[in-house]
Image (cartoon, rainbow, N blue to C red; front, side, top):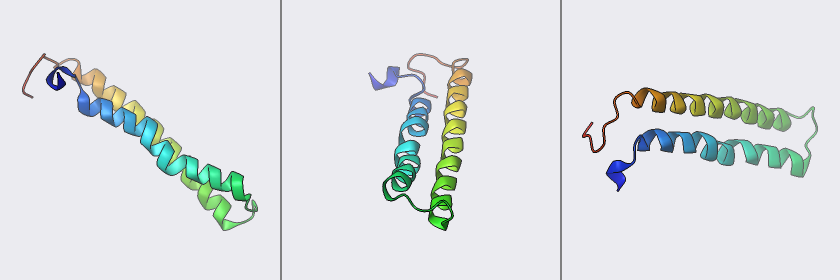
Length: 83
């Protein structure tokens, strides 16, 4: 059954970009800023905001690139191919 799953690595990359990056890098920074309400003049607030913004951009780039790779792999896909 696993051999029939096309583009398993690409699908896992998409799940990582959409699922793991937000849970690991974006949400904790946002939750910290919302929970503890650091001053907008503080370094902690701006570091957390920067990490969240950069991680969001990386997640978007990762999602787009994994979808692009899936599209490129459709040209060479064969069932049970040993590639």
